Length: 262
Image (cartoon, rainbow, N blue to C red; front, side):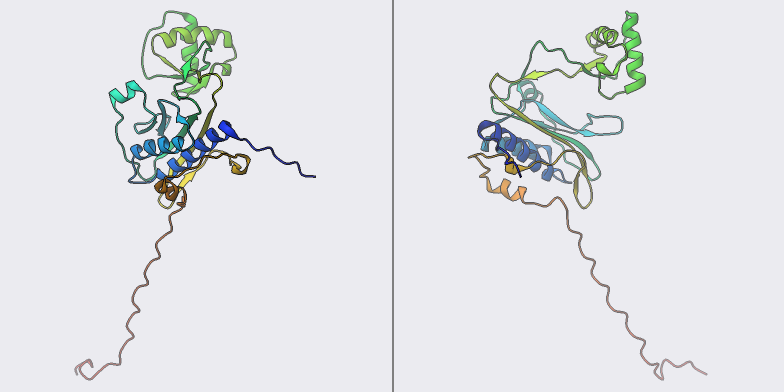
């Protein structure tokens, strides 16, 4: 006997479908010649269709060798500081790789830090002579094991010492913390994140899990015709058929003029 799956409705369905469709639309913009500005604008429009807001200031980065935050990036719902500094416009190019990270909220999207202490950090490319022995030992182990990639303090055998050592490292900007953010109580946040390869004939999503859209029911939908057309685009570009070369001329019988002279 098959059990009927209860559908998510109301604001829960709104935020999940808004984030999912925004991510799928952004995926279709990730092709040579398109720009990060197009994705920012599209995310805003789709979130608005579901009466939601993109979480403020979130960034999706180009991935490079040993680097998760490359030169090019995509911003969603810029905060005041980002608006003042400006977001550099960039175009996507062939064979680039991106970590597309879309977060949407049923609230205002202005998430804030609270008392929860983060355990995720990433080493920064700076040098400083630390004073505490515990801090120096922590930094040395982090550099050796993780390089410039993010890690959690739970990865350390002596987690208590790691928690002590990271404090001085973060204070002197040697470690970048990944803070824990909270939305207002009663609101919902949905996130879709995956890795994308920009290839010659298609845009490849190589991570992520499938979503059963039949599990979500909402009265809201995308009404913008341009975005609806975008969502219907295939991620695979059809190869152009090569035109057949003209048939070779058959050898004509030699004439008297062509005959070799004696």
